[in-house]
Length: 250
Image (cartoon, rainbow, N blue to C red):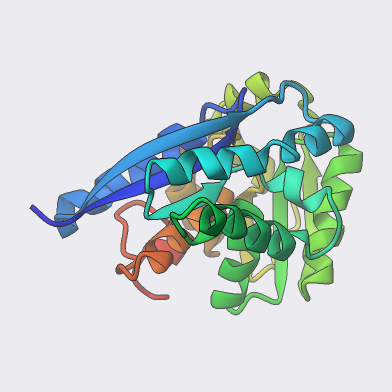
């Protein structure tokens, strides 16, 4: 048996997918690598995906970071992409630095990644210039996400907002609907397809199908977060079934 790593997760109270897809990917890695991972969560109250509720939720993230550092986690992941991106361009850097500071102050320093920062870093790692994107949010929030990504140097050639305001319903969205949604988009000029710009919207089962259907690398917020977690632990980034980013090519 390999070493055991403790993964801390800051999650919205209504989130159910972060604690299923990321553990599933790391369990698949364990089968081939021998490492073991345990998962430890702290929750921020959030029920509907609206800007004011997201801001109130983000204010709770400091408490969550301190709680998780009490457990001496090896890395801490903030699992709400839109909460970060709705706070203003480049905010993932501010949040990561602040939350890491909370762990240092608590005497248990831990690297901190955000799903928002992980997505941006993954797109750079994949050398993407143009992307197509699917998000579950209402159109105004999706536009904030698109503008945030554009401000990081990417062209968004097409995007879809599924307009699901209830975060529980986001987690119940059938991932097998995603290939049909992508089929109706302009992806010809995209270097990468972001199949789910949200760690709460399930997407992992659809990734191989959309890659085969489009011939394009497919990325999700959960896949990007898993990649960032592995990199922060100085581990390899090969995960069976994790799409192009987790194929070992990067």
